[in-house]
Length: 112
Length: 116
Image 1 (cartoon, helix red, strand yellow):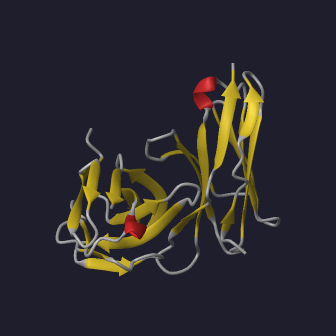
Image 2 (cartoon, helix red, strand yellow):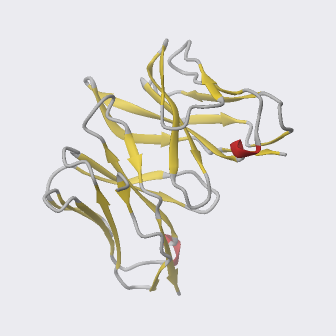
């Protein structure tokens, strides 16, 4: 089982819709979870972090965490073409130097 | 507002050549990392450092070496380049909260390396 799993997509949504991106992880002891956005040909940038069960909202983005199910999601409301990118889920492991393990990313396409 | 700076942005190497990818950060972060990203494969950790003078291997260290003589600089050395090292390389740094690695990484713009 991979440490962090994401559907590679692409996930296609029309402009204005809600995009839902999902991620599962294997280390039950993990406490910190992140979503990074990566535009084509660019470097990843942090957009959300979440540490507690439940929802965390930041503008049009909502991160959701369910530790019992080992599941993290990112909702993007009112999706815009500028949201088209690859979204990387990252989980900070609970051992060693607390390395960050990345999923392979989900490609999101928002059509006008 | 430099953040993390990597050079070069692009490089073509012949098999067996060596080179160094430079990385410097101006945020006074203790943690620094080198990742490689292959198409559809996500980010793989090559080496990391928790502070000046301290480095350790990540998931895919073979064929690479690093050093960390200062807080700011974390160069990645490729010895005897092979086609399997064709990839995009990202340097990153993260701040700590006390002794805890926050996991909030700041990335450089990347270095695209091709080995022919």
